[in-house]
Amino acid sequence: MTMTYTETAEQFLQELLEIRAQRAALDKDMMAVQQRLNVCMAQGDLNHLKETGSNTIKFENASFTLNPGRITYDYSNCKDVKEKEAELKELKKTAESLGLVPKKVGTPYWSVRS
Image 1 (cartoon, rainbow, N blue to C red):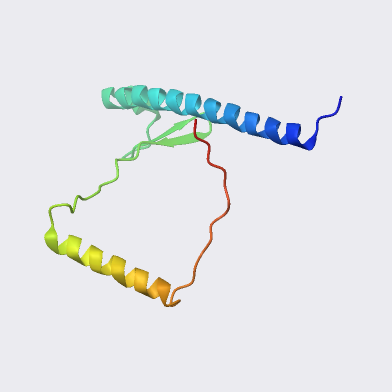
Image 2: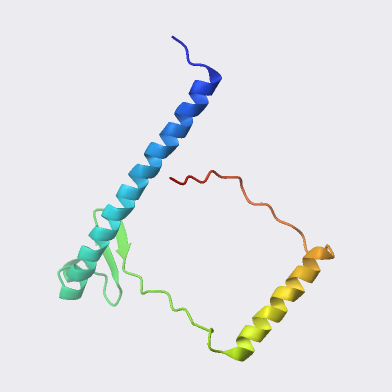
């Protein structure tokens, strides 16, 4: 029995749901393993694999690097910055409405919510 175009399209949607669930499970597993590796790194259990003077570890033809967390700043209490941000936002809207800046369109993609 052959599938109709509609059945084939619905099968693609089902596959997308399944892959999404698999990715979520893998992401969860990866976070747990990374947390355990953080403990190992802090305890020095990986020192024998570390490159001198870095957080890079060589293991089975792969390099693993423990990157420090990204620094961010909270400007919510800085009135001057908030005012300039609002001013910049208004300038951007004006430039867009006057056609002074080119519009860029990203690659189409599917989003899945359930």
